Length: 111
Image: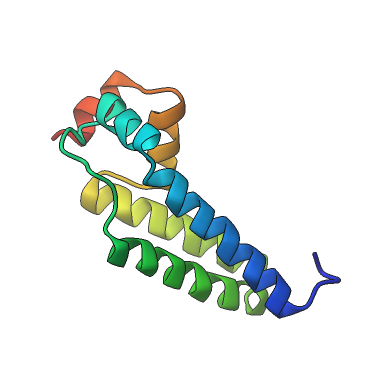
């Protein structure tokens, strides 16, 4: 989309992120989280959490074109590992557990 203006690319990124937030908080996905993970009482993200996710996406969107590709990758891997270590959860595990749940991961996430 390099031919599109930065504003158009940003609008597209916000639409994708907002779409993900809507999907992530749909009853189907919430029920899947409850089945596949230790999120038994999970009721979806708060509005504040979803807005913060859009805000962090915006920060990444603005930073990525100004950083070397390797820096962007290192930052992404760092945050995935940080959340894995601190709260036993991250985007990678969320996708894994939604698509192909692993009982050992579920047990580990439960502490």
